[in-house]
View (spheres, each protein chain N blue to C red):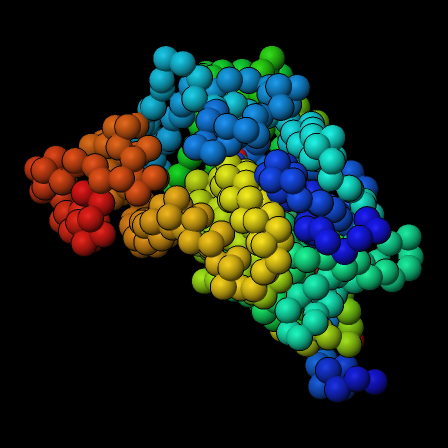
Length: 405
Length: 68
Ligand SMILES: Cc1cc2nc3c(=O)[nH]c(=O)nc-3n(C[C@H](O)[C@H](O)[C@H](O)COP(=O)(O)OP(=O)(O)OC[C@H]3O[C@@H](n4cnc5c(N)ncnc54)[C@H](O)[C@@H]3O)c2cc1C
Ligand code: SF4
Ligand code: SF4
């Protein structure tokens, strides 16, 4: 870390490690700093990840982090009408985040990146208005680290987002307030499907998930809209586990072996993620699906793009926002529509009454749920009209305006 | 006494025995009054206006408003 001709990545989570790996691949000097001494801990995640997101190719999911292969999902509507999607071959995994994050960081380090743990970034340094380093607190002392580009991969509560002015604070409704357990002795009905439950009483503006982790273990959690509902996320989840028939069927004998809290940005990406000498990626940039809450895959793909572009800009000696904008253009090309459409769909669904969701569940297939979540058009309009249900038809007309049906 | 301390009658307080450091409170605080560390979080009294926004998003009711 003696020279200042490097890319400094703030945050050693999936976004930071992916950025580092890609930048090293392009031959750049890389330093990762993280305020933690153990990345990935405490686990604050549902731990579900798709098998091959496009672009994750070079960054393979560490084998030692994989707990079980997943073939699809089952969604329960408020009145428990289920919609299934199951492929023959596994399409994703439930992983162990503590192993996953650590392993990705280890690979980033093995690829030649420097890693500084226990170093909390508290400020940026600038030269002629362009970011050219960070100030960290490390071992009780302040220290300045200069860099060519600073990458904010520092998660939902990004200090780099605040310091660059790219995002100040969230409104409560912009985030999901999450709570969860790792449980053992579960009696899961579908050991290779993820289960989701919806309902305004059950989990206001959010969902409850039951993800299998193999050998009778499960990751069971809830996300509710910030400021939504009358109870805390923990209270909603405990109520579900104790009283809901789906939980009673599968979790009656289950024991809790870990408690988890979490916060998730579900308001879509920041308007802009690039300034002179710095950029944001992962949760810091808002790279989280507004409906599913999935973020790891996006963090890794967008991180790969960020690493490539940053390395190129450093080698060309121009790290202005104009040049770094190539990153913003590239990730938006891939995911921009998906995030924007999902956000609109999410907002429509919040307004939709539970009974209408039940009717919708009756006419959609698992395949159309997958398509809608990735902003692709589905053919359910005629079926919906045939129900002659006024509220469902209104919903369809709104969806048609979004070109989703 | 800072200006904020003079005008606000309330202050956010964290129960460290319950807090799991999810950072939800810190992300919504309008004045950036919550500092997050690896094993704990801290409310900065001179920045906290007692607005209560943080209390709306905590998954476990670990942050509440108290009298200054
Ligand atoms: C309850 C819950 C369930 C989820 N379930 C899923 C799921 O099933 N599948 C999925 O794909 N996604 C899920 N997500 C989302 C996923 O966890 C995130 O999108 C992902 O972790 C983002 O990675 P990241 O690298 O951007 O940020 P993080 O993983 O948050 O990493 C940020 C890193 O930056 C460090 N840092 C922060 N501030 C500083 C600072 N000032 N100085 C130095 N270092 C700093 C932190 O210590 C941390 O190591 C879930 C999230 C939650 C909360
Ligand atoms: S009460 Fe308001 S100002 Fe104080 S910490 Fe909470 S959100 Fe911030
Ligand atoms: S929201 Fe609650 S659990 Fe999360 S960091 Fe704040 S006080 Fe702790």
